[in-house]
Image (tube, rainbow, N blue to C red; front, side, top):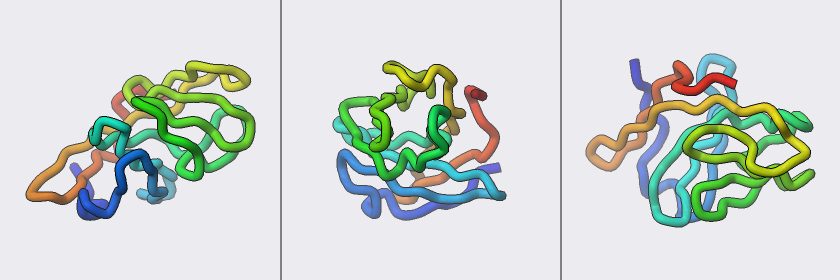
Length: 107
């Protein structure tokens, strides 16, 4: 089951938006190359919204302590975080972004 989140044009290049699906916060991110990703929105180090962080290439950096997470795998690339965040499947249909709320890669 996929859920329509927004229009693809609603997510600017190199930015993220926070959505909540069935109580699960998710960061929907357009990376530097324009691809759209969805990962768990809560930093595993400090309970901070990752959607408020910084997008660089295919990573999302927590603004509070600097942990970078892979948008592909959800794994932290830098400390202080050492636990992964979940990754969700994204599809683009007729210019709209859909997310499957079942994690592809669980933390």
